[in-house]
Structure formats: structure tokens, C-alpha cells
Length: 88
Image (tube, rainbow, N blue to C red; front, side, top):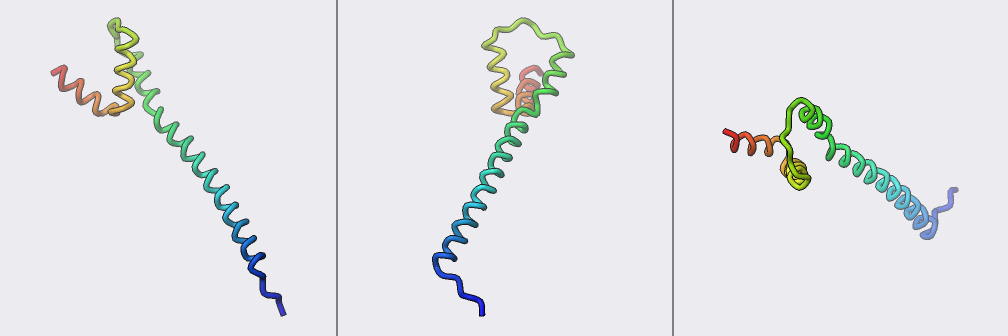
């Protein structure tokens, strides 16, 4: 007849399982961080392509950073909407 596991054996297996799951969760969190970083910068290529196709008047570095921060914070669609409304 099989021996019933002791509380210590059961606790050890629970701890081992928790450790395994925590390691897996840490890996998933890292993958999520990497995916969010890629997503955060996904608009760079289309913006740079569009900028290459238009002439841009001189501007200060401060203005360029402000425009870039606005795009990062509000999103391209909202900035385009605001610029379109003010240009009309």
C-alpha cells in the first residue's frame, strides 16, 4: 500500500510548485514589458516616413521635443485632429 505523504512533503511540493509558477510569471511579465515597449514606439516609422516627404520650416529643439511629447502623450490621431482644427 502506498504511503500517505507527510505534511512536510506536501508543503515542499507546494513551495516547489509556487516557485515554478512565480518563475513563469516573471518571464511573462518581462515579455509583456518588451511588447509594451515595442508598441510604444510603433508609430515612429510611419512618422519618420511622413516627415521625409514634407518640407519643414526651421524650429527650435524645444519645439521639436514639445511636438514629439504631444504625439507620445496624446497619440497621433488626437494631435492630427488638433492640428487640423487649428489649421482650418
